[in-house]
Amino acid sequence: VTPDVQAWHRKLIYFACNFFANNNRAEFNKSAANEKANFVAETTVKHILTLLRV
Image (cartoon, rainbow, N blue to C red; front, side):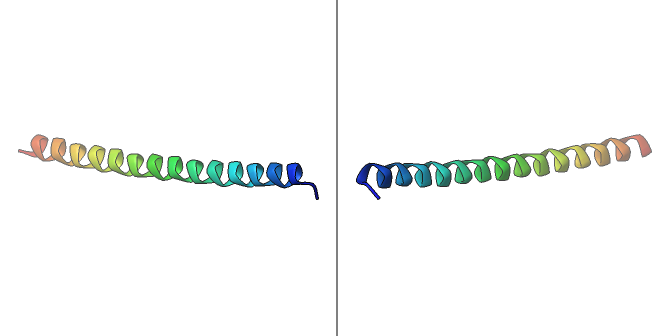
């Protein structure tokens, strides 16, 4: 295997690792944001329901 092919392999592996790491981080942030939005929506609905009951 020639050095340029080795360098290309390294670049490919580096790119793949970065891609997956960034993808996972984005997915994690998205799910955290969704959970927060769901929590806010639930508490808002509960709050409105308690106001209506009064």
